[in-house]
Length: 378
Image (cartoon, rainbow, N blue to C red; front, top):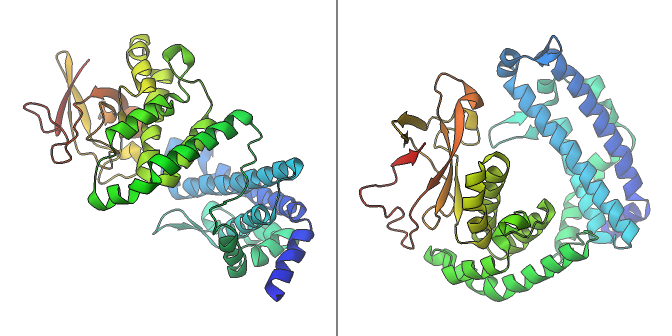
């Protein structure tokens, strides 16, 4: 009873006002960090590449700090929008409260940017005086009471029936898309996904064909190329609903999204005409071939090389984490074409067609090739 009484008091005590005050405090800390980072990285009014290279950890930490502050800002905006719609309930309020409590505490105690890297305030040039706003008023209270074990337990109780809170999209089209995809997932994915996982099976092609018919692969592709011309929020809604049934299905659409975006913004007119309609219809299934065994998300350090021989490029190297690699037809392939240029400046993105396979034991069924060597027309 005492636990619930405490939570009810918190909710009645206008938690959104408290979160707004705490957000202002976090923004003060972010501004202090920005000033400190500028002193380390800027030379003659511009970022110094040499300084940035020497201060990678601080710069990376500042990026995370900026993301944390923006994250709680968006959480507060979401809750405010729900309140205006008359849809802000206990669950949504506690989710915002927990988010503020967790992120504010990490900003003070250290942001875990990986399993082995924690960026502390001092790493970003922050002194104790810079953190003072987070030790006062609403920010201090949220750090103490925002994300307690009791709060998390109550959230678990409230989502036990599968209701994870209101989205507050306030958009009839997005709501209709969400409802349609939720019905599709309940009927076509959820009953079968665990068995696919246990048997390590490829996602059935008839399911992929049904997703194509629903427009999953062309959500944001402009209508002139056969897509639906919707925005990124629609893509997020669809991906979330598909992933609710099975993450492997949800990630299928994002591969098409990546490829279509790259082609739309950086491709030639011929590439747009050739690939975008087929990606939108699901005729072509793309995959992203970026990550390497020893680089992870540090794409500026990748080593896979593409060297031109006559009218073809020969690509050699190692890639990993190629989502749906066997089943796909087109690779967005990130490689190094200029070994003399460090970091990102020496990289190029290729569109590399590949044979599709329905056999996981033969993922690259091309005569005379294993997939370890690829030749591309220049």
